[in-house]
Image 1 (spheres, rainbow, N blue to C red):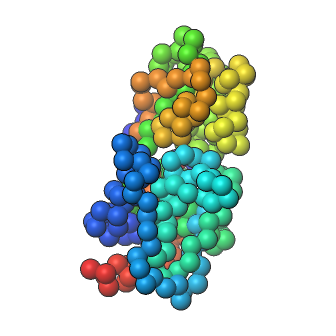
Image 2 (cartoon, rainbow, N blue to C red; image 1 turned 30 degrees about the vertical axis):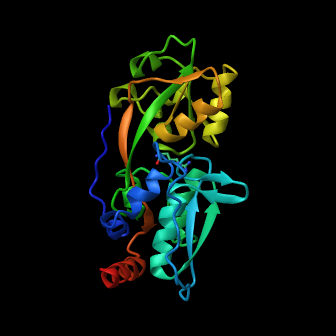
Length: 257
Ligand code: ARG
């Protein structure tokens, strides 16, 4: 199976990690203290430096999802913390997951924050920050399924979200740990893959563990298998060679130290 560890560049998240901000943000969404540590903009923060645009796909609890009209979640909070440090106003753009890297590449967005896995291929298109969380690709099946682990997925119909690592890995050849693209159906978002599972169009859904937990909690009759399919690192994407943003960030970080 896959284990992806790639050295990433940029110091976008270093200071936030060092001062515990990121741990606090994550604890507001995952674990026993969820809801108890909302991120708060430091008092007196001003925004003279324009907008910081974050590209995301906001159907991915607990990283980004809608609370009413607002996109909230771990990535939204981390981006807010970065924007606050830069004196920039955060603007969140919700789009298809596979539009995020192109948006960052073209400069339509300054950063991509979407529970995005660092992969070798993506790292040729964008630069990644340090990793801020480990994600796991898990398998969701119906309660009565005879599928008990990745090996049982051979020859089955698998639902995934378009352009995600779950999609990429599952579509790969069996030799590379995948199941072959003929066995994989890609949906525009996790929710529609889950719907396909419930209506019997697919036998299993492969998706990241945090949204998986949310989907299973919201949809009775589904379960997450214990066996992990792939472990990976999440990071924030910036335009390749955008040293201006990185320098600005690094300067801000240096000032704060
Ligand atoms: N971690 C997976 C990937 O990078 C899935 C991310 C999906 N994120 C989202 N916001 N829908 O491909």
